[in-house]
Image 1 (cartoon, rainbow, N blue to C red):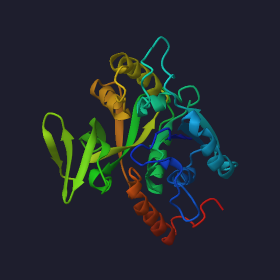
Image 2: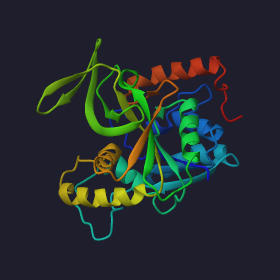
Image 3: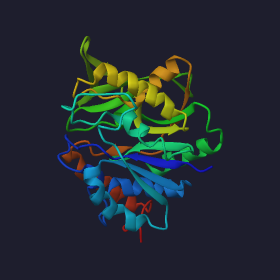
Length: 302
């Protein structure tokens, strides 16, 4: 059973200032998503599912339907605020999406196979898709809660232009996750790296810590886990318009209670992304170098 690639692309791009999911960074107008799908196809993925908002459906389909036709099965699923478990109510003052755990949950009706979750605006590298695809192919039991994650050193995941959100991991031995904590204000200040904690203030990091870049390998059992977590979350936070439920928050709880395991797979490639508009020239240059090295052609889909 070959895995599906689930791309979280419903973000509003507030810090970026636009629809960064399809902003062009490649020499022939490719977005970062293009390289993610291309690498996934080479690693043996057979389907890509986009999680988007209804108001960007036209833009996404115009960009991807034609180029992906005949290359990989493609589907588009909407993430909207009114998509909540039955019997749940919330304040309609909210505008911001419910978060990445909710984004995965909305795909529960169409995915029946092992799948990989990624961010639309992150470049993970071909080797990382291959290592997680190989791991998922080892176990075809879709009813277990044995998950996986590609981990990157935090020093290689930061922006020079502002704070970023990362799930900082604690490993049990070398292979399995003990805990992952979402840090929403990780900053690079010269040679120093720290995050801002409400109680402790600045907490400094060495830079070697492994972090989640939302590159997860799941079985369909995760949907029930997310539904239970989201139901509790929305009851407690429905009136808080900026509160979100993140994937690492739910996974951390599952691991702590012994319900799930998470295999940490070391990243084989350099990560980069476009959190801020100022990150785009760096991404463009990184792609240019990879094309020059022959990793990609200068026109990806021709």
